[in-house]
Amino acid sequence: MMHSRPLTLRPLAFLVGAIFLLPSHHAMAQASPQQEEGLKLYGGIGWGYDDNLLRVPDNRPAFGGKRSDRWRQAEAGVVYNKRISRQRVAVVAKASKVEFDHFKQLDYDGRDLQATWYWELGNKFEGQAGTLYDRTLASYTDFFSDERNVRERRRQWFDAGWKLHPSWKVRAGFTRERYEYELLRQRFNNRTEKAAEAELLYRPRSGSSVGLVARRVKGEYPFRRPATTGVLVDDFTQDELKVRVNWYATGSTTVQALAGYVRREQPSFGEGTTSGFNGRLNAYYQPRGKVTYNASVWREFAPIESTIVSYTLNRGASIGATWQATGKIKVDANAAYEQRAYNPRSVAAAGLRDLDDSLRTASLRATWQVKRKIAVSAGWQHQSRSGSQTLNLGKFDANTVMVNANVLF
Image 1: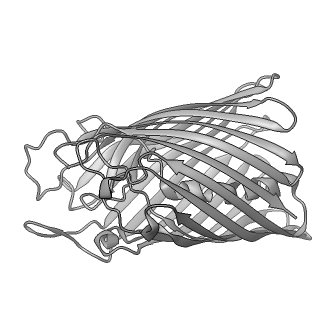
Image 2: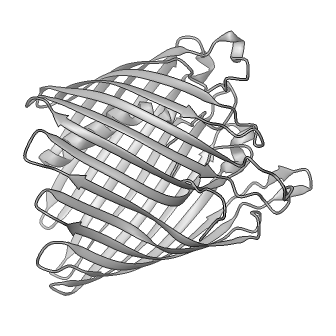
């Protein structure tokens, strides 16, 4: 196994920034399923309240004696979708402005852009190329501060597939992703991750598929993290050999998995090399009624926006359901649990304990499709962290309420 201590899966951390991105995701959802061609304008307004906005632990005083806050947001953008012969281009671009009632120093202007070219060449070659940029407020789940910490993310990718046979396909892809943090104390989390992968895919007539994926990820951190014994190097190399499965088990059940062997070399952590099983399993059940279900389990490495460590090894599980109450009203409910294991660095004291914590989240969201291009949504989310005294991460609970209205025209 990769680790002797309890492991955690992908972070469930409820990012404050993610709240502000929800409307743009909705705009994409509106554009993609309908596949309407042309240029559409997008606009939205929103309101939110959080009773522990900065995720202050129970054992620490609040900033200025204030834990809760309200915010307002306004955003505008464009959605573009165009098919030219066998090629298709999809673009979503948005600018937003977020203002808080009490913690006014957190006010910021957000940016979001995603452009994807879905290409085909003849009858055997196909793939996609794209770029993504977003500017939003970073998470405070693992970072104790009341200073504004804007995070910028840039991602570029290229993917190409060659159909060897009606049932066989070879695919190769490359991704480059870069994160930059505005706050000086968080600059040690600035990083660039480059991933290259190749896959041999088999897809029989049933529509299910299975593939063998080989992948290498290299992470580079330009700023070295200070420590009592000098500086820490967070750079890593991760090699993966996994099986990708997309199985239509029945007419109403789909199982997806990407799992296998992973070897990670990161000299600043423990013995420097960790290897073993790593992966994620998703299941979807859609009976003929109005309710659909989903569930996931995972065991993965994941980055963390902390001043103490850069990555955790996580394991977790989630369940969810979607109820199509009427033709215009949809309700989503989700719950998740994740346990995070912090691998002690080689420069840290070997006998340290209490290096794990856990995150729990639960959410409920209702969406009313007033008209075909107008949607109003309201949601609630709860997040809690068990904490780790050794890492100075205290226990906390937080509740968030959000209301948004969006329109495409």
